[in-house]
Length: 339
Picture 1 (cartoon, rainbow, N blue to C red):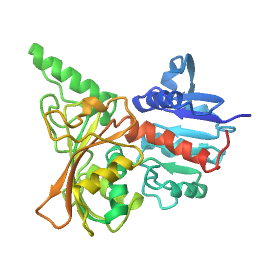
Picture 2 (picture 1 turned 135 degrees about the vertical axis):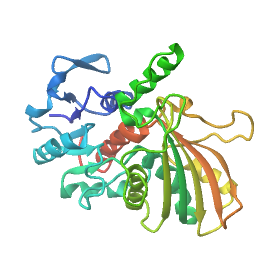
Picture 3 (picture 1 turned 45 degrees about the vertical axis):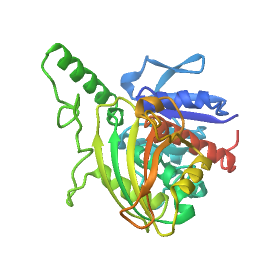
Picture 4 (picture 1 turned 90 degrees about the vertical axis):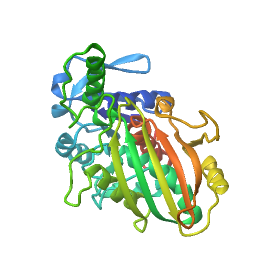
């Protein structure tokens, strides 16, 4: 029997993107199974040139599955990921459930591929938050060269980070404004069309939101716990693509030219940084691409050894589906599963 892969949550935005990326990257699976909740039974999803029938998650037997890519919420993951892991599948989970579990590795393959081996403790690997994933890809080569002391990041996160309901709400509110209909708020706390909302996830006791907390603690786990970090996370009226303004203070000197060269040579990064009109990347230009784009690299003269940069990536890809498939590729390349 060859390599068998299951995509759990195959009818959702991230699940469909996982199937697309498995096909685009020619992942060497001999069998792909699409799984979703019982309400999706009878539906199909596309993989390469064929249609896959949906299997029901609540009755699916994971025996014989080598890798299970989970793209469902934390509650469903809590119920079914341990069952899949116990049946022998290596679970790569996109929810937040296991990210801070000390027995579950939190992986961004360009940053900490060596940590993949930690999956053996629970047969589970966690995918980081979408805003964290693209940021640590940018930070890694710079940290290796000059040691990062502190990061201040402001995010501009697309509505697709809130799922299909977020995208639907942006569309319906925009249309309502244009035709003078009533604006309905359901998914977001305030109007998202023609607006920005400095609030993602729930508020915590210190005044930060959980999204901001995730960026701090996940970066510590993936990259370095000694990096001091503060984040402000903002939802913006963009359908796909997260952007981040990142201010970095280093322990050692690093010129903007050195930073630019390090980023150009780093895996998963494309630098587009011309000091002219349009010489940078915006969210709409990164959609459908694998890369994390870096622009606006420049010195911050207000601190010792400071650099500013602009970071943009397709959050449904690098922030979720692509990172999960890259983890599966690491399992292959390191010999933990065999094609």
